[in-house]
Image 1 (tube, rainbow, N blue to C red):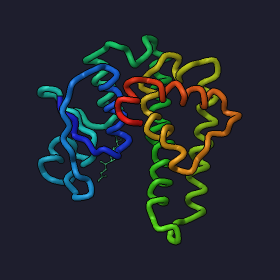
Image 2 (image 1 turned 135 degrees about the vertical axis):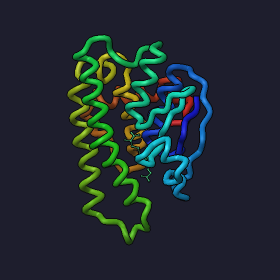
Image 3 (image 1 turned 30 degrees about the vertical axis):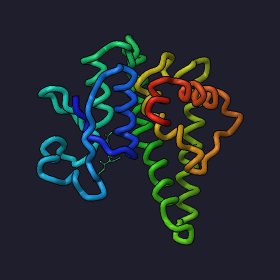
Length: 200
Ligand SMILES: N[C@@H](CCC(=O)N[C@@H](CS)C(=O)NCC(=O)O)C(=O)O
C-alpha cells in the first residue's frame, strides 16, 4: 500500500492512525503542498481535487480521508473500527462529518492565524474559531455521556478527532474542566499505542 501524504495534514494523520490500528504496512509518498505538487498532472490523475491523502492498494486508488478509512475498514475489517449496527455506523459517520466539516476547519483557521506574526493576527477571527472549537467540545461531551469513546467502542469517529483534540493547547484552547467526559476521552486517546506510535 502507498499513502500520498503530507506530515502536518490532519486528514492524512487520520489515515495513518487507521493504518496503525490495523497494523498494515505501507510506504509514504511525500507530496510537497508548499511546492504545489498536488496540482501536477500526475497527482491530479490520482485525486482530481488535488488534495492529500490518497491511498493506493494494489490497483485501487482512493482519495479523501473518510472514504479511505471506510475502504480500509471494508478491506481489512480486523480490528473493527465501525460498529456492526446501522444506527451505530450512522452515528460514526455523523461525527466524522462534524469533525471534517466543522471542527477540523476551525482548528485549521486558528492554526493559520497563529502562524502569522502576532501584530498581523486577527483577534476577532481567532476568538470566533476558538469558540467554534470549545462549542464543539461541548457537543462531544454529550456524545460521551456514559461512554468510553464517541460511538461506544473506539471507532473511526474517535480517530477523526485525534489530530485536532490532541493539538488543542497549541491552538490556545483549554478543555473546560467541567467537560469531564471529554477530558477522560482525550486521556484514553493519548494512551492508545497507534496514536502514541505516530508521535501525538
Ligand atoms: N476532505 C479531504 C480534505 C483533504 C485536504 O484538505 N487536504 C489538504 C491538506 S490538509 C490539501 O491537500 N490541500 C492542498 C490544496 O488544497 O491545494 C479529506 O478528508 O481527505
